[in-house]
Image 1 (tube, rainbow, N blue to C red):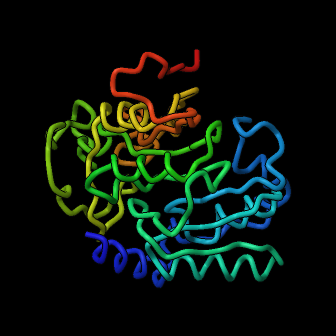
Image 2: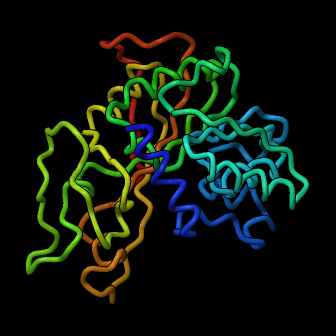
Length: 265
């Protein structure tokens, strides 16, 4: 699985596909606003130790570094990390890169980071629990974990519109990688992707030692969207969620009553 996805992402970099395009000049005008439009990070991250996890590609790492953070980027793709080094060199930023899988971060010490940021990427590992365990270990007590995850419903739903919308064609309780896909903006061709249920995405995060403070579903729909388009499909199912979670002082027990979830009104 790891080798397959590593090769797939290296190939996407060579083909200059959409998630391998570095940050634009306009993104650096106010880099903190670019990466934190919701204001979850408190308005100032200068000097913070930030890990951008599964986040190669010349976008997240350089932007957090431009906002003043001490940045490390972890990605399984050497080609994606090379983009980070290129952008950092061009903009005279300091970004440390590490080639590793998100579910094995033994190269880092316990409580090493103040903030772990993870764009959509947990879908590329079969089990999300080991990822959370590693993130909990390397995040200091009180630190933040800001992550994005493809919704299970989006991975269940067909990529083509039917007369009734987008039908669920994959079972919710399933094992193994999803079937290959062609021509979808909701999935990445050539990769192995895995569906994680809500009890895994949210429940395992809480049981790993995090308290969920906020959750949002970014809006990507348009009223006049053409059937089959990203915007039209997003009218029927949210493609991903963004979660703000805080590391507790100790690993939470499975029966803890302190883990809470707030949904925006």
